Length: 387
Image (cartoon, rainbow, N blue to C red; front, side):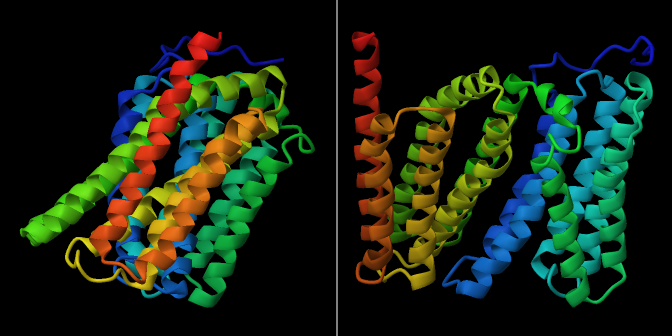
């Protein structure tokens, strides 16, 4: 039996995104920029590893904030606004600490994540007091327990702190994966799919926007015809990725999530909204770093690290889209004609980058994306006729 809730005016309609949520997302422009800078030039496996290991806590912090707002639509405008400002402060500290998160700023990175979990704990307990009479043990473990781990990491040596980071995130991921076993399935059933899809789309806009900002910044520092050519090609690449996601991907996302809900496949909803998109945004950011490396030296060969970032980034983008489509239940025959060629062609860019000038490699990437876009447009025009 739920407690009688006080009369409160919700800040937003359940399926709509509030302006303060968009304001919160702006801090991730800085965060992504800080992390992506570490893989500019010729990154090796240590740089790529550091990038991924720091990007996931950032992504997971964003996921946690989005999830709590999604599942608590009755938050008032004042509470939602205060929560978003507090989350921005915590995420901003994480972003500032990111360049030395595995060094002298590890304590700040830990403290910022502590603050994020305490905020989540307060929000969940605030709502639980009004709407539920159950014992809030899951809330205390998921947010309170992990907050303690992050706080302990603030005062411990890096070698121990990193282990506590991993344990804290593993606890959260594990509790979500075991939702049925721990009795949290009712929370998953309360996910608002319209809000979730819109929030994911807005985050992709943030990532693509940071890519455009990187291209413009690099060109502004090297204002010559060669860099301008590379920047133009890079812009077209990012624009075509945006076209692919927003013209085709968002429609598939909305319909696919609805299909998963109809099948009561809540595991599929979690996979396609919390975990798989991480690979997609990782790919887009890697592509932007490769373009930034190519702009100052458009007629030199791409460093191997930049070629890997470009080719594997494109492969991640299209491979993730293909896997998400499969998870939504789309037939294999509809995905293979574009999924396999896109991933293979993207990976071919890696060895080409070591042999050809950077501008030529970007031009080949543009040609590949134009062919994929043309194929998608043709298929889109055929569907109404077939129907």
